[in-house]
Image (cartoon, rainbow, N blue to C red):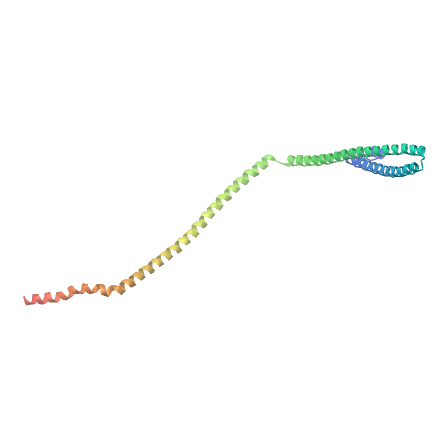
Length: 207
């Protein structure tokens, strides 16, 4: 009902934005007035020079007073503009602060909702279950890794063993061939006792 009678109530952000718009408009108007005064100042200076050349000192004095007032007005416009810009800056700061406050309010509400929905006992139970399953998985992974390592290690040992046996047999085969080549020259002196045995038999027959 009150909204229908007096209009919709404005939020602080809308009020700040509206007042900021008004201040900017006032600053532009002051700037326009100051520009007009500066143009008037130039004209007065030209008129004063002209009247001084014509030796009309009374008119020069009157216009000099106008020039002084004009310059004072220009200085005041500068001061007003500076003050309005300061107020506009403070309003902008308030607007930023309001925006930050609204953001923090929203975050606070979201955090409150999350905290209400969060079930700590259930969360602790989930974390304990996760830790248990994680440990179980680590143990399973370790056992599987050891089994795989053992399997690959056995295959590697068998291959190395076969390779070593083949190498040894090859070396033995080479040594046997070398012995066979050198066997006749080494066996010649051994045949001498076999030749003496018939002589002994013949000697015994003589007896």
